[in-house]
Amino acid sequence: MTDKLWSGRFTKGMEGPVEKFTASVAVDARMYREDIDGSIAHARMLAAQGLLSGEEAEAVIGGLRAIQRDIEKGAFAFDAALEDVHMNIEAELTRRIGEAGKKLHTARSRNDQVATDFRLYTRKALVEIAGGLRSFMGALLVKAHDHVDTIIPGMTHLQHAQPVSLAHHLLAYFEMAVRDHQRITQALEGVNVSPLGSAALAGTPHPIDRDSTARELGFSGPSRNSLDAVSDRDFACEAAFVCSMIMMHLSRLAEEIVIWNSQPFSFMELPDGCCTGSSIMPQKKNPDVAELVRGKTGGVYGGLMAVLVMMKGLPLAYNRDMQEDKKPVLECLDTVASSLESMTGLVAGLSPRKEVLEKSLKEGFITATDMADYLTGKGMPFRDAHRVTGEIVARCVSLGKGLADLRLEELTAFSTLFEQDIFAALDPGTSVDRRKSFGGTARENVRTALTEARALLEALAHEK
Ligand code: ARG
Image (cartoon, rainbow, N blue to C red):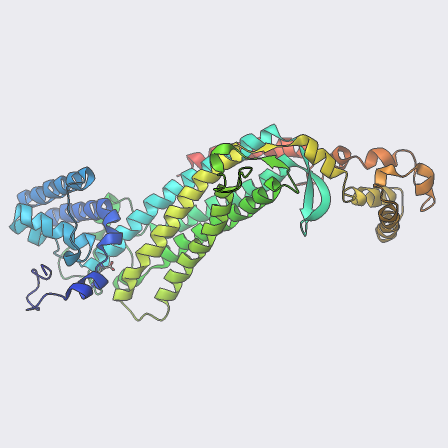
């Protein structure tokens, strides 16, 4: 019961269970670096404004850096009785440097302090996630480069639809990642506003300079309204949403990898390093990384919901409910970072089984659309071509044959437009290469798309 030593309002400390219940330090200790950076910027500003002497500011800054070193060495004991990272660091500072430490909180409240720290932390984490996303995108491009000529059955409804280049399929995930990257950039704009100096809710009578602290902390500028600044967690919701979208995309790829790797498909071999065995079934090699990414997506959506619902209906300004913002959002950020890293390795280690893919392309009448397109090319209205091809497929089903197994005479019985060249049109490679429409899967297109994707990734890496 060492809390509230700083407050004259209380004669009794908190009950043990209440202290434990209300403390947030177990979660927010991770923001020590941001807390110290924010305090140093604040101290410098106070000194520049004549609110701290030069020596006091030096003592504060030196003391804070020493505390940072101790934390990083693991030589700092955070105390739940001091509630959070902010009070822990401030109390220790005062214990070490005396009077000057007590002046640090001039013109500041924990309400603007916690909002500042959380924004700084979220900014750092999102920048790291953007880097992880680019590595993932790089792995997609390397794999796509190696597999322009690997044709796979493109699916709709998880049924054979039309052949596509595996590179085209991987580039679809690249597009999702490009949008995710853009969303991070947009989210960062929202994150990068400084609440510092809004104080508890109404601003401060002290002559502070909010522009200078914002600048020093790398923010684009100070927030405009003090009430909004201390009670706004839009940035946290947006970060959790960005994370949710990334996980949604990763989970879709993860699911495809699970399917591709399952015995009935056997399209791909996975790297041993991303799989585990079974404790009982000796033959097993399970796609754990993909399954866990798929599973963790639920937790990330949960984090988004947690922070959205926590904020719902909160009156202005700060409410203690808001202490519950960090756990879900930090978990979202952590999970996305580790999922991206694992998926990067998984994608890099995918080895498609060409023989299995080739065999699979012979099933499911995957080039039926090409037959309809062939007839359409010869002047038959597409709807009629669709019907005629459907009848041919039905005949093949009853004969237990594929489209290319029929003889020309069997085909001309359905339409006299069929000629010998129909058989070339039914080849999966031809099917792919004929889809030259912009954004289509023709290998020529895919090679151009790959070159453009590489340039785009390069540009994203240099974006600020
Ligand atoms: N531990 C609090 C949090 O994380 C810090 C802000 C406390 N402010 C207050 N007025 N009690 O939200």
